[in-house]
Length: 248
Length: 224
Ligand SMILES: Nc1ncnc2c1ncn2[C@@H]1O[C@H](COP(=O)(O)OP(=O)(O)O)[C@@H](O)[C@H]1O
Ligand SMILES: [Mg+2]
Image (cartoon, rainbow over all chains, first blue to last red; front, side, top):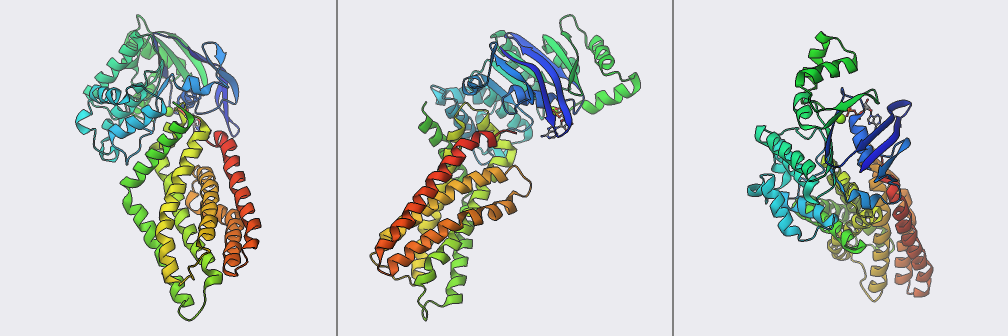
């Protein structure tokens, strides 16, 4: 579906990404791991058509995206570090605005449906500025699936969510995959993400250092793979793993 | 959905955001009114005829109010990176620009609708048959102001010093507009309306150019 090929990105003289190939397929969740600064968010932004790669191409159904960005954007649902929400608008208005931009039919019903789904119906008339981070995150997830995209790009989407919210998001991702969607998930919660995903990719210093299937993978065996891939020893590895959780 | 209706969606959103932050509009107005009052005191319109500098004074007030409004309009897009929410949507990049331009234009017109009568009274502008022509010149000038202002505000909003950068960029680029509007005023007050045509032509050309340039370049400005 969505794919990047040979993608590199320069920032000044630094190479943030170096020749990354990443195909996303329908009915699959791909988990993207890596330490802070590995280039995960940059890669996601390139696939979200927010940033242009310095080298390489982004493909949609095998054809370069360039020239038909609008058509492709219609099929993407994005959750980034920032919420992209207007603090001065209500939850309902934010969704409504987004829905109008995407030209969604029967928008009022759809907005209501999503508000109920993300558990914010009771707060639909409150301005987003008054929301907690977790509530904003729920709304952001709702916005990402509002227009029924075929690809979901999620950059640390669990940020600020409570237990219930995390379970809810897992359900959303599973439903999305089962309906044939393709999902890219950046997460620092290795065990949970491995349990959810179909395949994994480990990015380090802008390069894919390891990739594979998540089936038959236990949290422990993946932990070993992750450490090995990053070539960190066991002691400092523990410290890293703790440090990664919940960090940007 | 068509180009125009998506553009209007952006305008609707901006007006909603504006409406929720009424106190900002109010403080911009109060600030501009104070500028007018200071000029009123400084030049004493009771004793002096201010017709020559009337348009200039009014434009100083418009400029301050408009620049504040522009800054604020892009500040609201910066919080939560909200502008990115527009960028990920499938709408034309040019309709993002056009929508922002239209809401900025409406904002400025709203401010001018308050400021202009006040300055006419305060500065004792000889209000006679040239009013329509003057109004047309102001409208054209405001159009150009909103177009170039939207473009520059978007350009400057990616930098840390945007609040300072915007006026520094905007004032020199807008100087020709102000000069043209002042020319029109002069011609009207001098009773020689034949002199206003070149100024109008200039204003119209300016508007077209500064609407067209950002229209074409906005796509590249939204990338990073
Ligand atoms: N616009 C930018 N300009 C310069 N450097 C950047 C920019 N964006 C990201 N970087 C750098 O690129 C590297 C990767 O960033 P990012 O993709 O956010 O990493 P991750 O999401 O894996 O933590 C970081 O070292 C960051 O400092
Ligand atoms: Mg990141």
